[in-house]
Length: 254
Image 1 (spheres, rainbow, N blue to C red):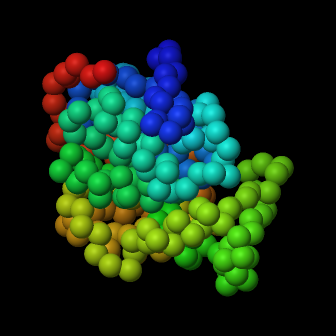
Image 2: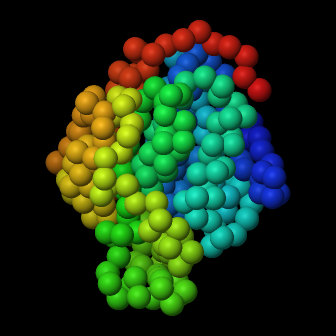
Image 3: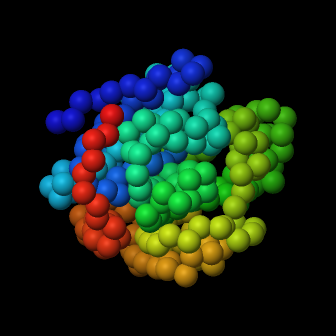
């Protein structure tokens, strides 16, 4: 078991992460909203990397999982800053971002900050621009008044909160209305039975990406999590396919 380590940001935020040295590109798994690196997909990617000698990085955004802090203080911009800091600390060469749900938006935002070092992107039910298309006009009015929106949580007993600051920040980071200037290979996996993020979002994303090497896989009975055995197998197949063409020898990483 690779131990959890903590990177301290300049403002004191401590970001929990696990890093596995190996060949490149380094796989960087980005969890979804209110999720963490202990999730099944993240662990499956980490164990695949271990079995194949591939470098891999897992992390928890501040306020999530093992990272201390108040989740209500988090925004896409602050979490992006954390991801880039941990990547910079451990992965000096190429990386491959793997983003689940909100992590699919995060992977795009991070890749745009370092496009020359991104060997590929894999989105699992990616949710770019969810602040724009995931809420009603009545809910957006609440956000504009600084209020928190609570929604039914299909995966737990407590309602899911979305905070006004996160919504406002997301509205400044929308991507799907214009070309996304990324040219790396991209693989998108999306369930057609996803009740949270319609699979049409992945089709819109594929169209918006400048890259000509974009493939969308639709799973007819797939839900939002895509965490069943066959779903995990599809994910690992995508990882193996993209990694195979970009293998580099291990080099020392911090």
